[in-house]
Image 1 (cartoon, rainbow, N blue to C red):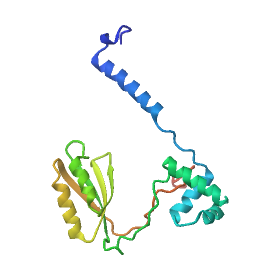
Image 2 (cartoon, rainbow, N blue to C red):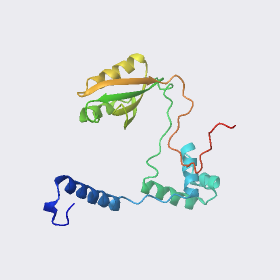
Image 3 (cartoon, rainbow, N blue to C red):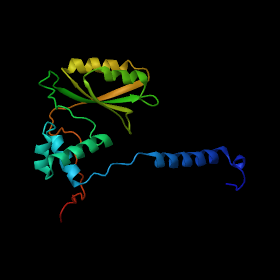
Length: 193
């Protein structure tokens, strides 16, 4: 690169300079992550287990007063650490026992306006943009294999979709919301000699 004016740089060099500057600007403007201490994690874990608890009961569980818990929950909601409070529904009890994960392969970037319209179906529980062979991953819960087939027909009708792969859950051993805890030290899983 030359030490003259920007006009002397190649277009690639100018693009890299602009990209680096834009990235630095984004980092500076990013919202500060909330500081979550041990009491916050205990409160979040208790709420994840049962969000209907009173502040007094939460306080007893985590070792704080009800007003202190109330203030922490308010701050956690305001920071975005708590996105909402939801009832955990049972799919089978609601007539949707079939759980499937659908990988969508698409030409170009998979997330399109038409593909986003699929989110209107209550069978769709999650949609993720993913790295790898697929562009998008759906978690869907349907009433039957025929209902899953109808959902897949909707996906295949989207322009640009080149294929899908579906994985049907036979049994579920763990299904839980985001957990408050963080593993500080992963165990050594190497075989013992």
